[in-house]
Length: 244
Ligand code: PXP
Image: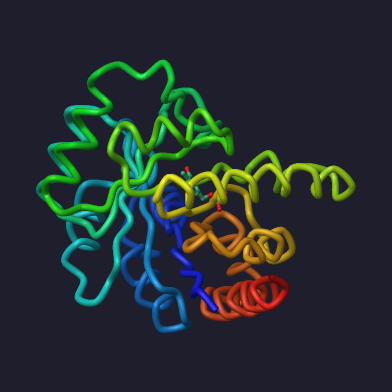
């Protein structure tokens, strides 16, 4: 069976740390705990306003031995420069608005200007695996391939937040998106809003090779600890994978 990587997003460990302005809890230490509990990699989003992850977190994370870093970023000149300095294993390009609470949807690759393609080429040219965060839409996925991305990350937020009875139709859309990505030779990742229940349906889609999950795990850590939450997520992923 194709393995499904779990990349844990530790942005909200930094949110908690920043609430008191000190060094605790440290996102790098959280990353180590996640990896020890069975995560395959770590995701961080260095936002333009630095509301959670800061530049020093990104530098320390990139220097961690054995840590597969997925660097989530807007495709701005500043962020491309930082990513080229950090050399993470992967970059996930996302839309970013200052006022949003979290990333609100996928990139619109059909309306993207030449800068996006240039950013993808520069990052990929440096040996970084580039994914683009998109809705599970055939035209967006085809555009990702045209622009030279190696992967798409399908936006799972709409599915994850839907009422349980509405989820099967939304999951079918994600499945079709994953098949389209594979047909274009793209790796397929997925993320946003997933928890131990909704991840199962995603894990049952065989083309999906990575999920990026943060908010649920950091929230669950309040009650059960981060290693236990990561282990529980791994078990849910294994249950979902066994269904396909
Ligand atoms: N993938 C992308 C592109 C995101 O922007 C986020 C949120 O930062 C996630 C995955 C993880 O979402 P969540 O924190 O809701 O699990």
